[in-house]
Image 1 (cartoon, rainbow, N blue to C red):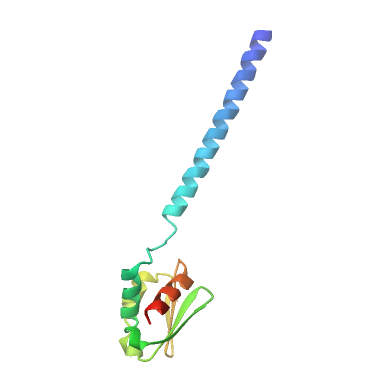
Image 2 (image 1 turned 180 degrees about the vertical axis):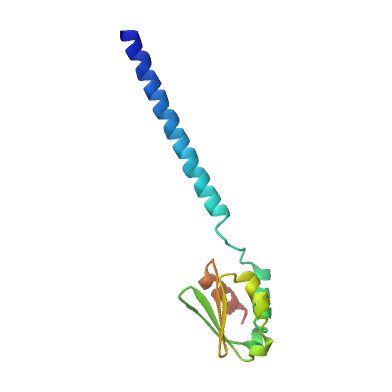
Length: 120
């Protein structure tokens, strides 16, 4: 009876350890997948230059600000804006009202605004 109790305790302890290891593995996998697939695009020089070009170039950009995670850009000439190209990087939406182009990104609009501002 004592032998059975000791081996049962070991089985319970080993099962608990395995359960913790499996749980930690699942958590680590979810975190890594979320980091890998969070929709972020590399905000590098090419990305910023493309957005600026698609907004009609730096001479076409009057002002920039971030409004509720949207990058709001005032442009001089709306005819120079390539909205179809902007949709390729702003899959959450491109909204045009008057001379304002609003871009909704999955990623950090403030960083994008900062990088465009540096180049103006």
